[in-house]
Image (cartoon, rainbow, N blue to C red; front, top):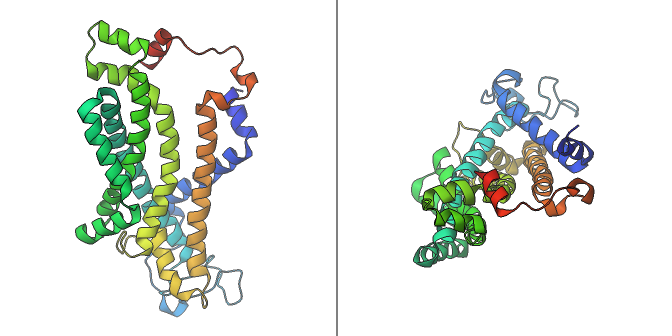
Amino acid sequence: MPGWIRAFVTDTGGLVGLVIVAGVLLAAALAPWIAPADPNRQELRARLTPPSWSSGGQARFVLGTDHLGRDLLSRLMHGARTTLVVAVAAVAIAGVFGTAMGLVSGYYGGVIDDVLGRLMDAQLAIPYLLLAIAVVLVLGASLPNTIAVLVIGGWVVYARLVRAQALSLRDREYVQAAHAIGAADAVILRRHVLPNTLNPVIVIATIEMANMMLFESSLSFLGLGVRPPAISWGSMLSDGREYLTAAWWVATFPGLAITITILGINQLGDWLRDRLDPRTLPRSERRGSRSPSPRIEATKTS
């Protein structure tokens, strides 16, 4: 059995995280086929029906119904699709844009670095949720605008990380050697600098996935996220806040879904961070491995 698989199986946190994330992804992907009911079908005579195991519950409503008689389990499955699409799209776009800005800033330095550095500082100086609310109020609440808001607030994390990596890598011997033989800057960035920044970027992207889900849920909770009939966990949580005393399940289950999914992503991200950082590996797994020479590192990443 490969070492990384053995390490993953013996890591309880990573294994739990994988099970949670895989379960949420499967539920979201198969929601149209496995959801017990139409998530938007209203049945007012069954409004605020408790979960099936509670007094007054019905077997066909496993997690109960909301204030319009809609099946909560079906809405949770379909809501996962919206929440995950927003989070994945925001992480992907912010990651690509922020990585590109960080590479340019760190590699070229000078005026370019000063301008981009001030832009990053200005971005970080504004509270993210306040910025998101202002942008949504101007552009309007919709799925694309929600993704755009998350990208605006998320690219700086990648840019600052990659900039620091690029500042270090541009002085390495193999990068200087590539300069000496006349390689173009685009080739050096693509073949030598970018590959050596991907490990921390992957770890940050995993962590940012949980943050994006939380921010999307916060915007939807405030009524500034996706609009009906689209379903998200944040909007479900918002719908249930008025029924906390009369129907606890309406807000509890969406809140649990958000909490458990973020916990799973964080556990998986912690495991991934440990595996991609050689300094955190056990000594037995590092035995026989040596730090690669600049020539070997450049060849490996090309």
